[in-house]
Amino acid sequence: MLHWLNEWFHHINWVQMATIPVFTGVIGWLINWSGLWMLFSPVHFHGWNVPGLKAIIAPLPRKIHEVPGLPLGKVGWQGIVPARAAKMGSIAVDKAIAKLGTPAEFFQQLEPDKIAEHIVTIFEPQLPVIVDQIMQEEHPRLWNDIPAPLKAAMIDRVQGQLPSIVGRVTDQIGENIDELLDPKLMVIDHFRDHPELVVRIFRDFGAKELRLMVVFGFIFGFLLGIPVAIIDSLVHETSWKSQLVWLLPCMGIVVGWITNLLGMWLIFDPAEPRYFLGIKIQGLFPRRQSEAAEVYADLIAAEVITLERIGDFLMEGPHGDATKRLLGVALAPVVDQAIGFYRPAAWAIMGKDRYARISASVAQEAADRTLVPFRDAEFSQKQAGNIQRLVAQRTRELPPADFVDMMRSAIKEDEWMLYAHGAIMGLAGGFLHLALFGIG
Image (cartoon, rainbow, N blue to C red; front, side, top):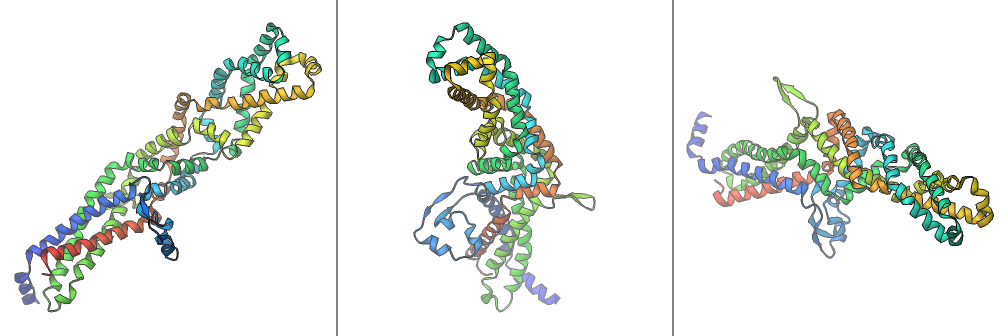
């Protein structure tokens, strides 16, 4: 045995052997660097149609259908994270946002009392124009015949009652907010339409960790290359080395696969801290859950669940008709309160049907304008701080496993593509080494 080792030691091609770990280290670095590019870039699909490809792909295994573009008969690429942005949004709601707060809690964080005050501030100066416009359309002669002091008295009456009317509106919205507002749908739609936001979540708080992952690609590759070099050298000292020309490329496949596997493990696992000889072992992302909570909360409060978007969702979303009906009912008494004891005279002059039509028109116009202040970007930004604090607090309180599940959901089912990419690059690296240094 010692004689054989001595022979091996003196006949070994040290240059070839020493270059294998360096090669696998460089390949490991390239694997993780290009793997990160595959994760995040491009934000939108880039590629081209290939005639007949869709029919070829159709009968293939489901995993193949997960490759961006292929099910549509296209060859190209979209970053795994932006391609799965809507799914991450859905899981983020199920795992985190549903635990962060109900629609009612989110609405309360926006301070309905301040919203009501803001609506009054915006709406009050518009009242004379609204009333004048509707009366000119519905009964111009009557409106023109009413003395100016009486018109002013009617408008003053409504303006005086406006705070209680608007308060009733915001109370009605608050009482029914669970039926009118769907945070999950808001998040999914917004992430799907703006996949770059999901990329920002990772890059804003994880830039340091992602760079470290690339560096560790070299370290993992180099360390894995040492046993590969020894095995390759031992095998090629045998008489059947010519039959094992494929050995180094095959080991390159294993090294490439394991390098990416270790890279993902480094980022996400273990979720819960573990200790080995007093050393804390925890995934890089869950280790920084507290900082991630702030980044995530900033984005949710500034971009996703904002007062502006809540207003749009309430009026234009799938439950917009229900919101408008609710507002119509809440605002229906506006004309009655404005006319007061003149109502019987108004009925006699214009008839109950026209009076009812005017009441409905005023209520509809008021409803259309009531949520306009929700779309005031400056006011929305002021109210965002409360949402940010709520989301940050609840995200920090998530169990680390749930936090990792939320962050990893965008890539979990597609990680095999990264591993396959690592294996292919490892294979290519093995063949490149053979081309440069020969069999040995």
